[in-house]
Length: 425
Length: 76
Image (cartoon, rainbow over all chains, first blue to last red; front, side):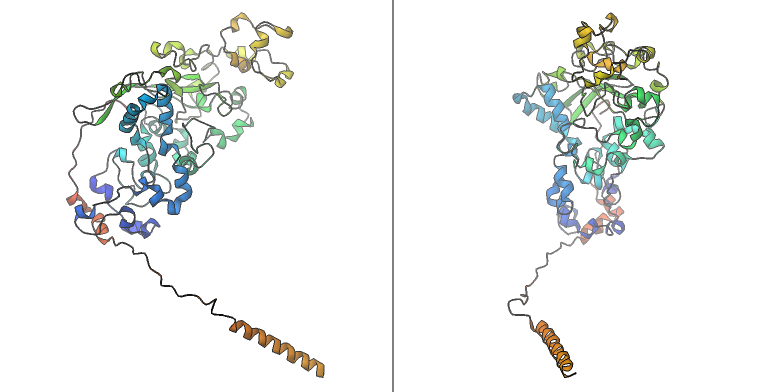
């Protein structure tokens, strides 16, 4: 996004602004400063972004939003800290170094009310959206994708060469807030209040909030039915296409300028399906698309030695929700496009040797086989629905209670994947 | 007929009394105390707008921007 000219950033459209509720206030009521013609004197003690103190300047009218927002991810950036602390191993002695690193390189992503509702985010140069007129819905490209641009924005808007934009944008002209609503973004829902990571808790938004027929099996699409009506694989496994991954990011402070800088060594596009490292009742999928994040064991070494002693605690190929959804994709063109096709699965050979342990939870050890094997697999007896355990091997490994012993060819299969083929009648 | 007239007369008197009572009800304890409202002074901002709505003045008074060459590399 091209930065605005300096004058353009601060030019007030008073004709429009004065007609709005915020326009009923004088400049000094929010921004301080002095009502004099001299620029320096006028700007003395001026508050550039009053909304950086939402309790003081916004809460009087927007209390519901500001009180929730205090604990929301856009404000706390808790998602970063969840990952940083986990990979660090929560070593107290390391916190000063990590906090310095965070302050230099990560904290710029913190968002104030004003950076969504009246001006472009500071980390892309700032500047009013529209002459200081406040926008209830942040303008997509000047607010949301100004920050979330290099991956989500490029995918959604179709800026990756040869890859179409998301169908929700191309066909339905939907913008970000159509799915990511104000109550979510302000942290006002059960799922988003005090979240510690964007993937913690239930999915919100969830594709099936709108596409209800997929979840209840009423759409009559065989592929949906065969995959548990959307419960066995995430929607993006079939409906997203190639997306961006990055390798090896290092951060430091420039000797030359004293500014915080970073270096990312590689950016490339992939589409790879991995096992779901966050499998839960909220996210029951066995498979999800995975994206490589550029963290390495020495990404923060400028700030101290061994700041990621627990590097293997989290995968570097992470649960991903690519924002380039298509109805038809290469992998959903036929059963065989996915089944028995190791090219699109994150198998161990695609993972760097030094990252194998970290990615143990996402690496696909056995690619789902030929679809005939699934379709012809013996069904489970109907009374299995009453079993309290889903550990099939506890009986079928040795044939306890005269149960059929699993064939030797099944030995490499994951324990929890039996029901993928052997469904209940 | 005589009783009817007396009935109407008494009803009329009762209504008049009621109306009178209503108009005479206010007591000193209920009378509003006059307070002098102190309006919050709203700071003037005429000079702010005079400049910030004038494109040419903003161009003339803008601090020079130093184009800093990015030392970062790769996608952020």
